[in-house]
Image (cartoon, rainbow, N blue to C red; front, top):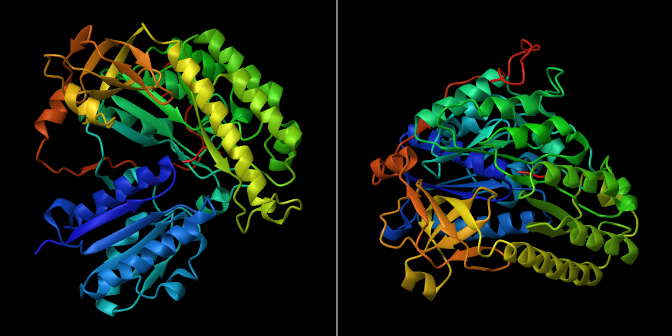
Length: 495
């Protein structure tokens, strides 16, 4: 009888991408996705973990405690833990949760099926944590969440030394894929019905560091513009210290690169940025945003901000609020500082009281929402192009009554819209007029201005009721520098 599996994902986009690979691996090995609607428990539960936030540990061990009782009534059920927390706590997970069958790290996700079988035969836990990358994730099978949108890893690891971040010690130094391998994957995805790709890395705009080309990322963006059938290109996440004007030019001059930028700020205080070991300052950051908007006036800019870093004063916090007002972010991911063992910041003096951090966090969240809402209201009455998502709007009873669907605008804003009498499919493209704005989304209550059926919609329609696992066999980044590439010929976790 076919075994069922469930993958539970925590953390950044890198983990989401890894989970697609884990699902592909398991289905290639003969498992099938567990259908909760049919009842019962899965034969395998995989936790793909994050270690960035302090509550990650508590959340994992709480969930492992819950699954222990499920496993007790299901002989033969297996539990696996992977991801960043597994990489960090390799020596303690099975000690605290001896019912876990497999522990694997960020560098060897391809080992999971073998480790599961080994644990079954040996009837004991298997722990395998590699300290360096075993195989680039894109060599593995994948089961994508979306038929027409895909993640494409261009690098793994990070060379930065931010004092609050544990990621470099868990995912290792940056490893770059050769541009030809990246483009080969993009072209294969497009041939499979994909119309939108997101280039993914811990620090995408330092791409090329391994082969000595500091302009490689801009060249890669321009090369994506030459891929026929690829309608939208996004990327996440860049680092302000590596963000250069050639990338801005590539974004502005390449039609399928979207006018959207996620640029982590972390703090608006130069003093705090220095303590964080972020090698840019407020003026440089704002200067990048100014040049981006000069080249792309309608660009939507989002960010990450940490509140309550050790030693942060009220004056430092006010500096962050000032940058939020000036930068006009369309949204921001805001976090309370989390003291993570193994990071330099964990040992800094002046760790702030929880009450102070909470109060500042609430003020920041309120301002972020106020600014985002004002930015969204500027779009009321404007016509926007949407790539229709493969799920219905989740806005409550009104959405149910109006049969609203959702889509993403070119600037990545979420838009709920009424399809009217058109048979709009996920993957198709519509143009709608924004009738009103909310802090976190836009709404169009009028029928679409235009509607374009796409091959992505065809791909979505043809695969309903079918489960497919795709694999792009591309290899590890090659050793040595690639041949020089012209700007046109070049083939998670915000840090």
